[in-house]
Image 1 (cartoon, rainbow, N blue to C red):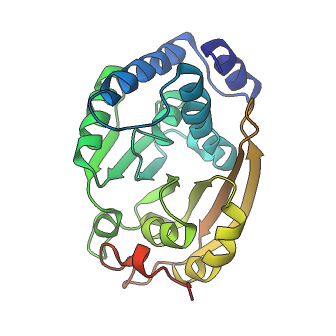
Image 2 (cartoon, one colour; image 1 turned 30 degrees about the horizontal axis):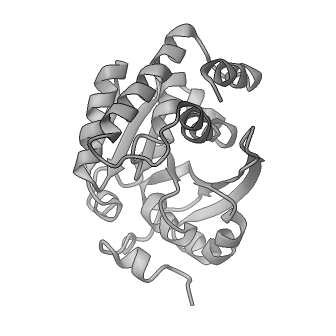
Length: 243
């Protein structure tokens, strides 16, 4: 997917695609590739692949959460790595308030550099583990309108890392590949325990490759019990609801 096809795809979806925004994506690509030489940020570096499998893939979030167009909406991206999905969405909607938490400090360093290069404001970067970041005394607990994560962990683990950050009435959107449905079956009791309720699963595919994508939309209907998330490492070692 070249830049022109990317712009056409944005336009076809009714998404912002000004020349200034397209220039930001171009800068994003060049900074990503340059910094990837120094640290392992992504295995995907060819221009067409980055535009399709990182930029456009991230933007699928707008399908599941059209509320990202609301100025000042507070979005938290857990384990964003090289900034996906939140920063491509932030480029489209500059008034979005974005918080990124990642456990690897050098990735946070990269994101800081990237945000400066892209001229992005209201992006807050935290080097922390999600379990601590959402802890019972954390100011971030139940503070976000929308929480998302892409390709971080199985859904029953992800729910415990993300749902404690969502305010009651807000949403958590898990961005999954082909395993969304099977992961959802294993995560149902975890989602309920954490105060969540499944709204819908949006199944779609990436253009060109036809790679399946599953967007799992969960509403926060009740406060998360104080004991969650459990201490760092526990959610992945002993996922909720796993037998």
